[in-house]
Length: 164
Image (tube, rainbow, N blue to C red; front, side, top):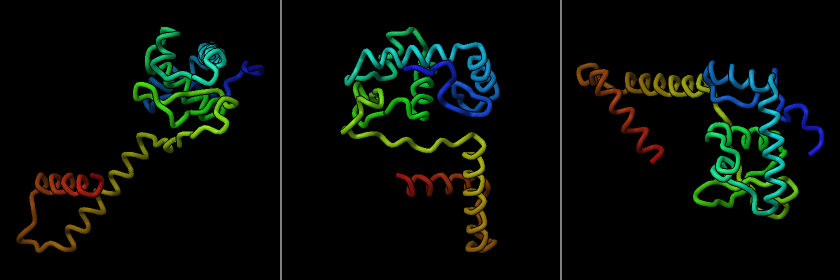
């Protein structure tokens, strides 16, 4: 656990991870600068070392530290992205178990979903909506077109059948 003076997750500038909002990013940069994030990471690594192969879930880390859910899940995510810890497929109380990398050998590891920013999610949804609207306009006779509200309902219905 040496070399933890700097955050292992190297964004530019380094942050403690953030949810995508301006206020969340400002908090993450502030906590990276004042040492709060590094302290949380070092403490989490120590607690995971003590937990050994049993590891910890986010709620267990919250209970041991008094951190709120966002703080605990953020530090686990950042350390996982930095490959300092591993998120196992194993779950306790419906939460993934995190362990130090050396405790994960031979154990099934969970695959993290690539993170999308709010802007990426919006752009993908916008593009999907435009594609749907263009297709609708191409195939629908003018005298049978739906109102915008009905069109939005139809899009939601189709999304439900595509992903459900």
